Length: 309
Image (cartoon, rainbow, N blue to C red; front, side):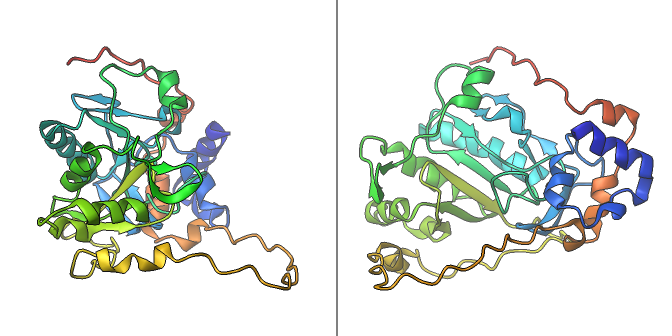
């Protein structure tokens, strides 16, 4: 399937992607396994864009390991890759054993076949709240090992004190400390816990934002790089530490209706197509295809080298 998509683009040339503007964009971008050989550029918005000149985060570093290798989502804008390397080193000096890195972006960004609505421009990255073990994980372990939720089972707004240690706040504080960070998404319960325990140094809490589904990992979002034409920034976070804005998350659910609502026919959501993305994403999708690039599709996972401690 992946090879077929690439061959179609090679044969059709520069107009290949244009001929498929009504096809779901996630199929087009999810089928490309190599980056666009263009100058690095985040194009569009975090949830509607693409990425030129992506750089891969190496699968192993002195203080990190990449998870879920089969997804091929360890790609990002160079500023994201540089950020992760600096964070891993700084967090290690703080006492965090190492980063387990989840999804960044696809080789050319864009919508994904599964999972995230964002992560499209190479400026988003997921980092597990589970510390890295002191050995190199196998390919199988990286596929099957699960991130540990920081919340109690069945109580989605209650911290699990067996999972949460003094180290999770350390890595979150460090992750938020860099000026290029726009936001860090965590569960509302994690944000509340940080608010309760942060002490007097609270400025970094402003960038920690509550959001659904972030109980086992945190999601870092960087600002558009300076001077990045065509990159759509997110509205800056407001003043204060945000701790006074959590009450809505902890309200009890409303009572069920006394009369069941009338059933409505299911209307599937409209798929994002290439035509919905910035025009430059067509150039990103078509860039640099050749017989050699097509042959690279379906390559086996790279062999892991022994870690050097």
